[in-house]
Image 1 (cartoon, rainbow, N blue to C red):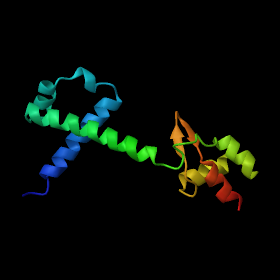
Image 2 (tube, one colour):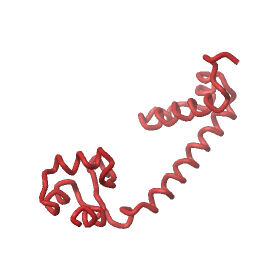
Image 3 (cartoon, rainbow, N blue to C red):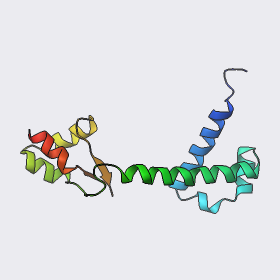
Length: 122
């Protein structure tokens, strides 16, 4: 096998990533399995299986996210956390991006669990 050829697993992973991006961009629903199979040079059944794999991945993602510490509470905004800690919003954002603070983006805004703010107060 030459270095420029993809393995079977790499090919499947690449196909799934393309399907995921198409879905994010809202273009996947307009494409038939036949059209996608032609584009990927694979069988229609393979595309159907890939779509099923995306559905299973979505379900798994939802299960994992439901177990996160912030799932039961929305958490504090960056502004609220900064006020509680007596520091600048930029400091909090920098700590989030640096991985020092556990946070989640919801609807384009960072949410910090109250327990995380309590930890930082100590």
